[in-house]
Length: 312
Image (cartoon, rainbow, N blue to C red):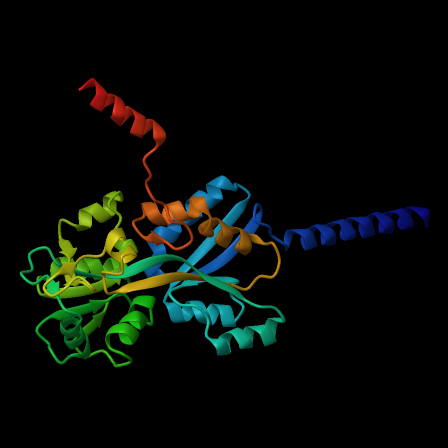
């Protein structure tokens, strides 16, 4: 009996130990654990970079991103498939109230950067200057003189943005083709001289990305009528034109986080909002929303200039 008792006692202790360990492992932190996040596909290049640096800075973490249309990202939040979504919009008042009632705490969301919808054309195209009215006529099908492509078969943030901001709630014309994803769209425009494509700037605007630089052999930016620049002035998407509000197709990049503890989701969005994460947005040629990185002349540089003038 005593032997059986000792065996039973040992099994109980092991069971308690395993159960306690499982309970601890269920909870992540900013420096440990694994989280699945949903990200709009048009932001993939820059979010890949954010994740790479975050994980290298915190070796005990794993951020697994699923890239999909914006509507699917919101659906993941609603179905509890993810705690964190990165999309081009925040929550409505109704959505805020819904989550508050469902979760008993307020969902966090904010802008971390500004992106743009880039208009791209074939490198051999003769047409590269567009007004918003002209783009609207192509998108709604009233002008079928061009092959129009958008970056997804479902409701990506680019598709939603074009419907809201350019078509003002209208529908796409039958001439609009939905590519499988952003890479497929770029390939389509590269192969069709009469095509116009709409794609996230993150996919084509990074001048330090070798793959994106190769795109420029087959495609180029369309120039859009500049906001506030006077008649006849056109602008391409860039950090400068996005910051100044001159490029007309600018959109924010939001995070939406369902987390009321200091978990891995909180750690990652904090990282994106502070200096290191904001610099990644800047180096990807987007515009950081949380920090203003301005170049200032140092005292050393100023003194050196004075010395040079004196020596002259």
